[in-house]
Length: 100
Image 1 (cartoon, rainbow, N blue to C red):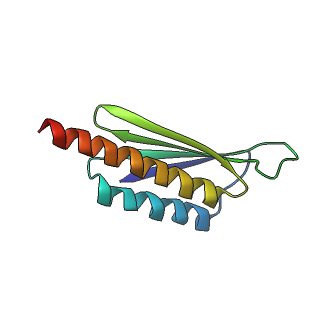
Image 2: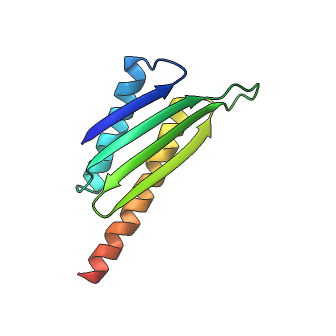
């Protein structure tokens, strides 16, 4: 699966990009029809400790799934976002099986 990472207002290091790629590659084990994924990383200019926004757009046939999380670190946001996508894909897979 092709993963595109875009970081706004900062430069993401290779370690973070590799982490994101590894997490999203695990989604293909659950749902093999994923076309591509786009990840947007943003920093908010606030004094709040939770100022990092992770947004994942997952393209699958017929639809796009979007998850947006705000956390203290990008890794936490990606972890939680991938878990939410995994749940959504499992529900979708169950619906497809019930129609077949």
